Image 1 (cartoon, rainbow, N blue to C red):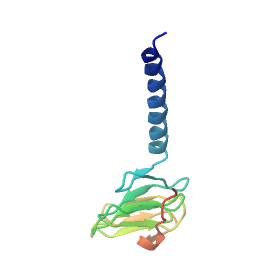
Image 2 (image 1 turned 180 degrees about the horizontal axis):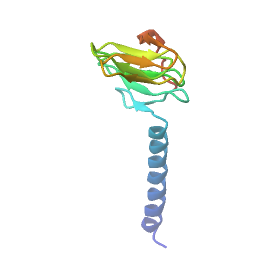
Image 3 (image 1 turned 60 degrees about the horizontal axis):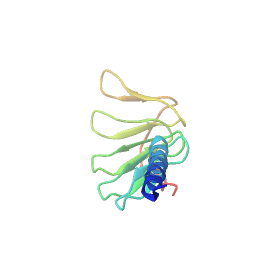
Length: 124
């Protein structure tokens, strides 16, 4: 049998396996850093890249958004920007946040200001 014919199915299987790995990482909310390496959040978290390409992730069940300076800020629950552009998050882990008719953010368990210190370094 021709060895070229055997190489094609093997190559196809290898490529399919690599694609499945990439899709699995994307399904976990992984983000590629500026070097192309996937950076993954903790379970129940989400990652974003800052203006410099550095990756930061929300805590498990927490929220993450980019502030007006394109830097990630996090909180224990869902985060939203208020009418002034300030990011606030629910004080409750996995808590919800929404804006009212006046543009104020209301949160499950109350709101707190989002902070960069509340963000986590991604899991490698």
